[in-house]
Each structure stands twice: as C-alpha cells, then as structure tokens.
Image (cartoon, rainbow, N blue to C red):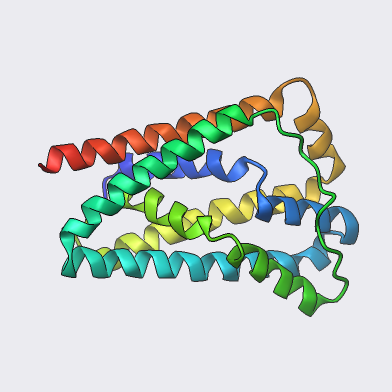
Length: 209
C-alpha cells in the first residue's frame, strides 16, 4: 500500500463516516439524552460490532484472493456497482431530514453496550460496504495482515472520532447540519466519494486484464 493510497483512504473514510447513519445517529441521541460518559458504553458496543463485520469482510477477502482470485474480480465489480448505487442514492436523498425519533431508550450500561453492538450488526449493508470499499486499498499480491492492521486502525480512529463528535455535540451539531443546505451538501459530497471509489475499483479490474 502506497502512502498516496492510504491518504486517499483516510480522506474518503473521513468524509463517508461524517454522514449521519445508524451508528452516528445512535451516538448523537444517547449523547444528548445520557451524556458523554454513559454513552461511552454505546460507543464501545458500536466499535465491537464494526470490528466483527470488518473482520468477516477482510478475512473473507483474504481467503478468496488466495483460493479463488477470479471471485475477487467479481467482488470488485459488484462492489463498484454497489458503491455507485450508494452514491446515487446519497445524492438523490441528500435533503433527507436529520431526525432522532426512532432510537430506543436503554438506561443501563450493559443495555447501552448491547444496543451499540446490535445497531452495528443489524445493518447487513455494512458487510457489503466493507467488501466493496476495502479492496481498492489492498494490494493482494503483498502481505495482507499488515495492510489489514493499517486500514483497520485508520478506519476505527476516524469512526471513533466522528462518534465522539456526534456524542458531545448534541443539539449544536443537529442545528448546524440543519442550517441552510449543509446536510444536503455533506450527503452529496459523500455520494461523489462513493462514485469515485467505484470508478477506481473498475479501473483496477480493467488494468488487470
């Protein structure tokens, strides 16, 4: 993995993780209702859930690259199509309201932790996202474990940063996102990033031919 590739990974992850999704929404709502310290249990649960999904995705990609390389090409093409779909959807629904009405109230630390895990695991699209997103930044002919570690640490650092921001910001962040067209342009920017990564995945497939 080159430095430029890793830098592009960090920038892409930073932008994509910023968009309000189930994890960020949960961190935002619980931070607003229970405060930062208690919501740390939820953030821990979110991280565990994401780690499980990430491990499944990366280990699966490693196995496929060794045992059935042609499947990796298929995954990249399907991943590019999926990321394009996410990008177009993000652009079309860019004006969707940022609301927090559907979050379940769970008062105890253990329940907060479990809720964080299940919110991460309950969205099967996360596995598809990891499988589509990470292959662009992995050199499968080079040792995989070191690349897995670098990407995982970078991803978790950025994801945790945004979860903390959403947790401590509360109403201020919601009000900021609702001002003017900020949320719309954030969603559209994420949509553009998805499509760019999809195009790069397809270019990798074409250049390998």
